Length: 598
Ligand SMILES: [Zn+2]
Image (cartoon, rainbow, N blue to C red):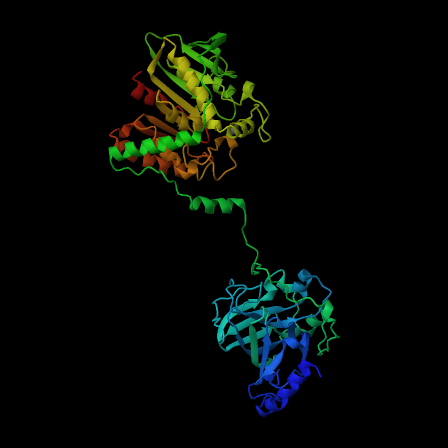
């Protein structure tokens, strides 16, 4: 006589006396699945030593080789009631609609078997704790998981809907047809009680295992399609050596739910930006606070602008001279570092009686040519919105210098994969400068600073009145050049001022606009606040999609507070004109005249 047989025989008489016998329906329609005496109606999976019956209670000790008890009948729609008690740190579960296809891989089993309603006293997440459909559906709320105490499960399966009440509180209410994986799970299968799925010293106990079959609300065709018989079936003998757990999902896996409706990098980055407020945003209430803020923020900006090349003595090559109506335009090359000469168009008005202000003009992503203002017939009017501001200012008596920004036109290296005409190498400039601890904006500003070095050598230039003007990519440089160079006394920036958050960060801008890490420290309005108290003219087309006007207006509001605090509110101005991404001379001459006295 085996150990198990002896053990079961010892309890038969006792249990019959306790009223566990029989399979009769109670008044509430529930039928006992366990008779309290023996395992009639059940198939023992794994070693029989893993199971015992004590005082009408099914008992399993850990480490005995038990696997699970499963009913001989399959059930489709039902309410299952079971009481359970688990040891401290113990682990077990109740299987529903399970199968026994042992040849399937664990992954396939997940699809053809039902669920394990988990029982656990170990600390697990909500999709692996007591009451969860293990590894598939998380509980809400979390049930009581106290050890060494009787708890109740009421598990209801009706078609695709599965609900679990633990100690009378509903913690699972799941329609498996709503999920791509679970909708493939069967609607019929065995009921099972797992052994003490923990090492020796742990136990699980079950009692009052009762079931109430429910009528199907679905067409019987569904089951037929799934190849399920509507009759109960006896299971074929199991080769225990081939046994693999039907529920091998022991590693934590995410609970299954609907696929996230939106899961794109933009969404992720918006969230990351939300959790990255600028640490050094301007918030001064006194001049003293402003000065302290400026020192700290400027230092950080110098850091993010990166390392600069080694300075070399100023060398200039004059290679072309062209006389126009009101000015002469030179083409010169200025050596800005050991291995680079910056090409510059240098405009000198014919009529200069004394030292005159000079403007460094910075072009954008269409390269230098549109900024030269060539190709107009004599007498042809300049369009209202025109990019040739270097020429325009020269025609109005200002000395101007229009450098070819590093990476465009004749200075381009590898052509940008997404760039058209003119030739440009923003990606090349950005990648290589970042690899060297520099930044594309920093390097391009370096060249502009060397242009200012050159202007300082020119007798016709008033070195105390040097300003800058930039559109688009040139506008980006005008955000940073005044931080690097105090000789810049006036700024006109177009087509850029808004916010990092809603422009560069939110759009498919050129990579050269990326200044690594800047958003951690400040927004564009904070950057321009570093230019104060120098005069700044913000030029924005109200229909400029790359520099949202709402952000420009908001930033202007902040800058007005900065300039007001410093006692120079009139030095911050805006020309928010009715137009697209373009330069406007609507206010430039007046602005220059006001601040450069010309
Ligand atoms: Zn670029």
